Image (spheres, rainbow, N blue to C red):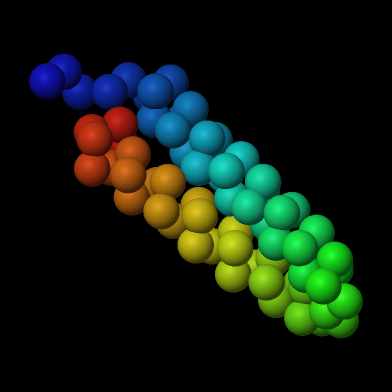
Length: 66
């Protein structure tokens, strides 16, 4: 398997960050929909971002993109 180029690595990281941002936005909307406080919603945003971006980064590393 050939080694990934710098462009491929950057795109894999950008995809992980964008996935984390989408998950954070969904977590915020869901928390506010269920009448959670702003601080609780922001806590869920942070957790969602870290969990999903870490998961996508781990998957990219396992399939050889990083």
